[in-house]
Image (cartoon, rainbow over all chains, first blue to last red; front, side, top):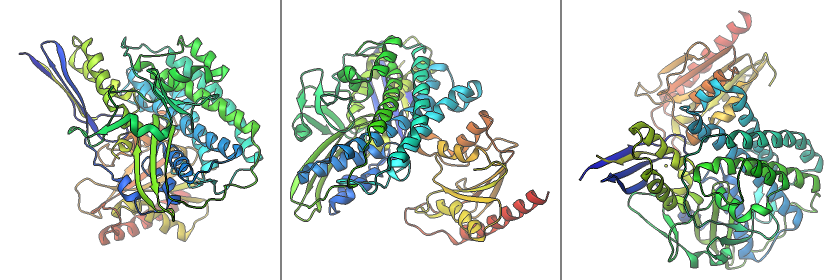
Length: 429
Length: 156
């Protein structure tokens, strides 16, 4: 029978090392595989025997793009184990540093990695030659996010100011106020980003996802909330392991996560948006409507618009948090170790990030489990490929190959996180 | 960063053997000090580097290279005049490299009037490994070369 293979040995514009292999037989997609060959990194193993206080700084090293997500899931899980929670002012600062990470991470992906796919450029450099003003806007946004992270975290990459119980040092009101003018400009840039991406031409491809995201009662999710799906899942992080399972597949050094008894699910911007649309700020909701989006979006290619809306929300929310900021009495709360197990999920830019730690009486970590968003989305990426490619088989080889890569880049996959990503092989005749 | 200044950027990871050589050169130049010279160490991510490239009149970047040449071999690229060969330097986070930062700066009209890269061929990039002796010697030589260039730049 006629067999066609589409191969991409090393995916470009993704973080980490991976490839694609798609086999087409008799005009139908037989198999679509994402092959992650970046070596595993064993973070969970080398957390064992370390102090509970070290988890935020060790796990931050998993990723240079989303270290805050690792720090936040780590501190919340440890505080869960210790049975403590931080006061509102510290909670708001955590939300604020997370805004910084979303802005810098999403801006990098939208402008440098993803937009060139829609505009027919090889990469950000070609795009910068043709549209320097657009790329400058993206860089300006990213820098505002980085500066927010540096102000709260001590530095922009791998922040060093986050600790279990709070921060080592908290900012003065005037330090934060100095960023307000920049964030106002960033809001304008983010709104322009939504309008710009909304004009792109999107392939017609939708899937009926099970969306999974945190759903706090009254706010768009960053640090807390129940784990909710559009198919009646509604649990706390403590029950994550009862409902989700990871398995090893030979083609990937990153574990595949599934919902027990149901299969693949989607975390990240599309899921957060679908499950929390009403909690976006009025400015972000209005921008979504202007972009022609409803309260749910099932086309993964349109994730670039949703990311832009989330950047707008993060700028808006950062301004709100800064205006309402009251300096806490102390930068952190007092802690004393006790034996127990702590669980937490927070929303990394790419989706929900689960941490679980078991600690003993003196606070030594006995076991650790980390499930990053890219691991959770692997099965969904493969299903997107299989579903979308079926409608594109008549496209010329090079166009098809590019479309396949783009399908994976929709996820802003972070392979280094997950192996702790791309080659495309499409086989056909 | 004030325009008119000269900047040396040492790039690399000091915990990965010869990868840290760029930063060693930066430290040696910094230790001697020179008026109007700013020295920074950098991990090498493109967006961060782009910020440093914006403003100064002259920038010298020092990085390790992995091309198969003899370890300690010094290469000089005048990137203000010609593109950097893409195979010389490795990739960094999200696939944006030092070469990407240079070309992005050029595309955006931000490349300094004078922009030179010194590459020192490394031998070992293992985590926790010390600098190889021939690479250490090359670091000294590159520090001297940059010092000479700066002297001529200021007087010339």
